[in-house]
Length: 392
Image 1 (tube, rainbow, N blue to C red):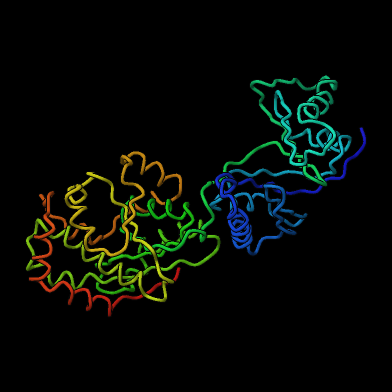
Image 2 (tube, rainbow, N blue to C red):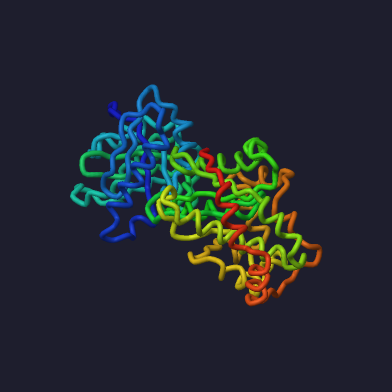
């Protein structure tokens, strides 16, 4: 067989974006931009959006392993593959597939898709012709039902792409295409997962963390910075903001609060602060607040307590993990890389205000009455003056 001229590329496919109708080009453009930001500092030639897929051209200096690792953390990518580009000509396709035979392990199947329907052969015919090359060599066995290797062929307008192994992406929508939210980030397992899930839905996420340390320098050395850094891996190379909220003003007033009601009141306090932060011009107008609440997982997360909590917020409160069980959340935390950090020991404000037997059915009227008596608005004002913004 003759030699085929091929170029090394990555072929990148999106899933949900393809359903976006007239807005689809905007989502695709955002995804291309996010890929370019994620790969800043990497050696590659160009990224092209073409025929319902994205093609990333690499060169001899490209670190393809590192590029693949980074692509696995770009929201919007359904799957991708290391591929080789050749001419949209059946002889070149046959030759290129044969030259790449070292990628074949065990039985094989050829799977062709035609983006360009003007190509003179149908997909099944291309499968047969390329498959015959391997079958007739006597070295390979064709198995169309349970192959160990699939030779993927995509025929475009002026070229064809050949690949062997699909790599699953994180899916979802490109970060930045649906708006901005602020996330209440604790030191636990749930809230980092909730933030990740909102990023997967295209949100830019800023974090709010109430810290109990007397000095913010201690916070900056804590695992909270590492948690945000881990989530930043999915943020297309962009920095992330953490709004550090001192616990001191609330703590000073907590002695006049019924201890069993304190946790719900603390959560209402955090929502009031979060609404103020969301409205600040520096955040670009966040449109919602995210929490890691999980229904009935702990006493403070009963429907009654969540109802009493939510009234403190003018913005919608989003709870992406509310219907998950703890095992599911832990599995996701492990998958996205936050679990080991989340289980590290840390003095979290929620643990400081949690009573041994907290109220599970806090009445909204009662919460408002206690807030009025302890001067909650003044506590919020005092806290707002001391908040610091940390870029990570």
